[in-house]
Length: 279
Image (cartoon, rainbow, N blue to C red):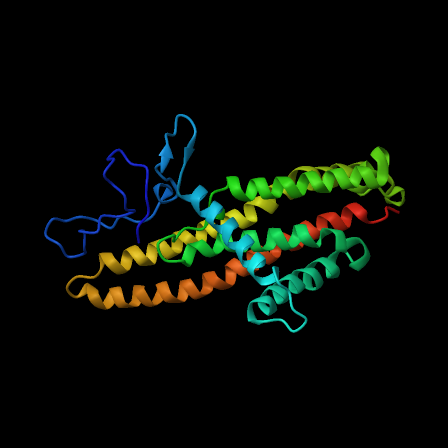
C-alpha cells in the first residue's frame, strides 16, 4: 500500500520497506504504521509556506465527485426517475427524513436540509477514500478537516441560539438554567456551560477523526503484515493477515457510513437545541 511519508530520506515514498520480509537473513524487522503514515510530502510548494498535498487533493476531488454526482442526477429531473436520479433522491431523502426531520422536525428542519445533505455526503466521501485504490487514505483522519466542519456547525449553533433567544435566553439555553434545581443550580449551570460550549464541539470533531485514524491504522497494519510475512512458512500467516484486511475493509465501509450519519445527527441535535423553547 503506497503511502507518501515525511522522512529524512527524500526517496522514501512508502510506509514500509517492500524488500523486507520475515525470516530474511538480513534481519530487517517489521515496520508497522505510525504517525509518519499520516504525514505527506507536498505535491506542490513546500512545508515552510503554501503547499498542496495528497489529503488536500483528495478533499478537492471528493468535492468534485459529490457536486458532479448530484449535478448529473438532477440536471434534467424526470417525473419517473432514472437509476442515477433514483439513487440521488434516495440519499437526499434519507438525510432529510431520517436525520433532519426526525431530529429537528419538519417545520424547523426544512431550511437545514441542504446543509446537512452536503455535510453527510462530504464526510462520507472523505471517509471512503480510505478503501479506494490508489487513494487509500481517509481525509478525515487528519484532524484539521473534522475540526473545520465541527467549527462550522458550532458557529451556526451559537449564532442561532442567541439569535433565537437573545443573550440572556441563549445563556440559559446553553447552561440548562432551571430555578427549580435550587441550591445545585450554579453547579449544574457550570457543568452544562463547559459541556455545551467547550466539550461538545471538541468531541464532535474528535469522534470522527479518531474513528478514521484508528480504522486506517488497522488497515495499514494488516496490509503491511500480509506483505512482511509473505516469505517461507510465513505465507500461512500472511494469508490470515490478508483475510483480516478483507474483513477490516468491510468493517470500515460500515464505520465510514455510520460516522457520516453520527456527525450529521449531532449537528442536527445542536440546532434542535438552539431552536427549542427554553422553560
